[in-house]
Image (cartoon, rainbow over all chains, first blue to last red; front, side, top):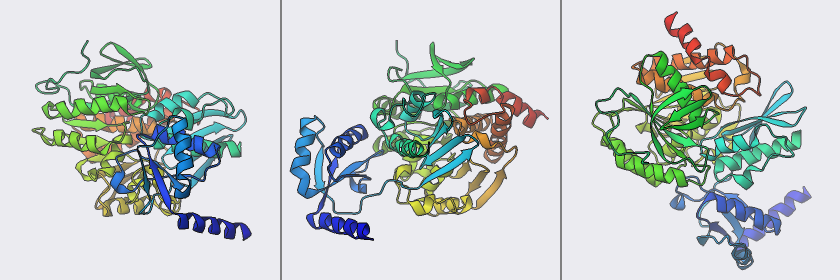
Length: 178
Length: 300
């Protein structure tokens, strides 16, 4: 209850300060900036852009405007400069948060949106990746399948698209369950 | 060596099926041509492509189907892209410039970087084709068709359950943003299909792959295929791609769309059952059974 209250208070505080969004040239840069800013403890969130700036496979980073200068400085230092920084004036889209689990004996399949990953729970080996529609999915599948969870690369590090991001969510869930 | 030309592909030739998609290799150049399958590889313009999920699996299934139906191999437009969209950008440009000069009876669009502006330009080129081909989309091309508001321009989409939820969510620009109340497992496929049509986000026909395969149009469910039931197929990467490949091959061979969807769904299931798969099986183990499955359904 107390945590809920604190969270609401934080949200209210952020809303009072206003929210902005960082718009990048491509999803690869968004994913890179997200990792960087989260490592620095910034209160950011990856979201879907409003329709007027949407071109296809898009993500933006939502952040409290009050932290704009610090965030831009960090991004500039790491050569990941956004194309635009604009205040959020309309509702941004939330990434998918409902994941499905299915067990096939010793195998566990997790689906996040359009992406599925299947792991042998005894060996912790990734045995299949399926779904998706962006061109990095077959590439990511090639990089992940046949590797154990502790040796497989993270889709967020080698992928570029929202499908890669969805696969990361599925992988994160698998890791917590295996 | 020029690997793609602007010549009128299909005109005066016997090539019925065009396929557009990607190969998961950064250094694979834009390549256009007829495709043959050789064991676990495809051959296009002297280049080898490994058959292992994605567009190569879809093509391999189409090649097997067309061969069985005594038709020419498909003409494919391929480019290497690992997700940064650079390869797709080149191929979009080529398609915009040349698709209007083609005369395929069917074109299937597959894994690709969604880019609304370039996609719309490509559709304008298709609009100029003298005799409009049957248009099929899966994967990235299905996503961008919805994003661009042009889903009804397609004759067939082949979504799975997660992708159907995306089509049903009028606010989601990508499956990644599908809202939880729509993704919820309690939502039945018929409800999601109805919702997708209500908002104009479905192709004229849908072949929804899943535990049961549903074939539908705006009027509702036309057919449900559920046998043979092989639960282990769902986790295997590429089983949706082979379904799209088979249905594309059947439609290009002249089969009517509804029959092609039913036969394709059954073929994919029978080929899967012959392979006796586990969740760790790989797609090439299933593709080799497609001719046997087609024989069982069509000849007998």
